[in-house]
Image (cartoon, rainbow, N blue to C red; front, side, top):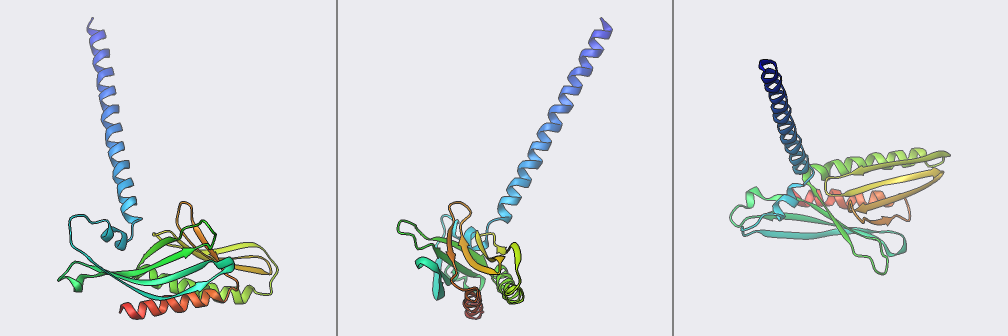
Length: 199
């Protein structure tokens, strides 16, 4: 009888320990998931998601890039703030991509200032690589720069053919395929102009 009680007690203890460990693990996983979700949201998107506060949004059209088959990518500066708190404004850019299809709708990606500067540096490097690889017969090679807000910019080289692209959206993305790889340089000019305007 005593053995049975001891064995039963041990089983209950082990089950309880497993249950507590499982709960703790689940909470840790949930916390990591929330943290990861927060890290994947731009400051601009977080500001736009605010409820119950008065806010001001300023947009300025910097310029765009035209691609194949009426596709395009438009760059605008974006500044948002609460009235009276202009010194603490959240700044960045939005890139609106339209694939030019008859029934398509455009997608917009938001970039915080840190990402805007990184995008400019990435575009500069891509242009150097494109020039270097231009006459080289290569296996299919893709180089790209992705942002938190779902912007994907880069180029593909297959043999000696190079195709640049600007894509927006993680689900059902819209893509602007560039007619010439040099248009990545045009995009860089617009991005750099946006940075100057936001200073």
